[in-house]
Length: 522
Image (tube, rainbow, N blue to C red; front, side, top):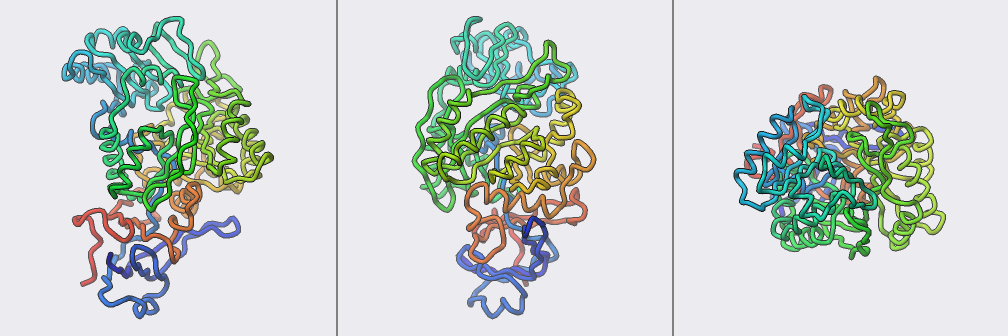
């Protein structure tokens, strides 16, 4: 592993001190054996460089800690880039149906037609896919089309039959509209089980494809939430073979969709590239599909609808307490105010019962002042998705109660409340998973004027915030001596976020590919 001395550009280290955020500017940075050995003035670092150190002239570019996506379904990102029918960005049902029919013609009779990404708010017809249409378009294949939020799924009659779903079927934490062929929340698990578990080789291929893509976007670390035992086995196999292109943190799912079974706590795993000491729960659904649990009715929906809670509070507390006592971090998907009320009560009870690690709130979408204050009191880490403000804006404007629109993913309020904030994308819920897209949305595209954050806050949340959420801030997230040499090199002007692009990504001081390497000094 080579030694590297970086200079000749803007080397920026996100910092938070006494609640204030800033970007510390460094002149030079020395890497030795994959970790940061020294930072400071070039004249001070040159004598510390061992013989043979490669000098890297950034030529005016920006060097930052590698980006960290604190919540992204890596294997699903890879799946969409390889085998899954990608319906993100489709603008009409006619186009969706055309793609479904084309895929059906390429499949053998009986093969599942699996797709993801439709969003009725962006379709010209403002309607969901029809079971009758899917029956006609794919008469010989079961069809499962997951909405962009992954909380609603359109299926055809064959899929319902294979999943054993009848008009009388009921499932805890979910709903089924048999006539329309729509599965909500945990009902998805019935169809997923009917499809048959993907092989470990498939999971490994999807994980690698996802990781490689994320690295090209400047990500050196990411958290994959909702990992089950087969997927966990695939991650561990890749780690053992040294084949993970980025560092990955896992949230191990306790209660899978489609049943009442509970997975036991996993064996913890800590290595340089893979970490699993956290678990995941779903408290409610998605805001963009009007299934998040709220106390006021959604706009435009008749009869009035209030979303779904996934757990009874005592059951959630019991499962969470088991993990808490065992030292696992907990990340709970909670978006609507009813879900936030429930989860914050549960978290408070956990800390009253026993000391434990800092826990997370995934999404934190409709947090009011009372939720922000309680989260700050408990030391809870907020994991929102800035790019939702861009891609899902039409959904929020359509469904969120008008009086709550300005508190919807109000990032500035999270910082002002004093929370530790870790930014993420939740891909492939959205198409744009690049941190630079999220950065632009956080800085320039709030739902309501005044809700934007500043550059230092956004960069901190995409680097240090993610490291804290993973419980690994001593190894990653900042340009401190002893941290891994995980960097992203950007081109463009920080004062013009839309001008920025990724030049290269380095993990442990190694570039992502020879063709994308920062040029050495002449």
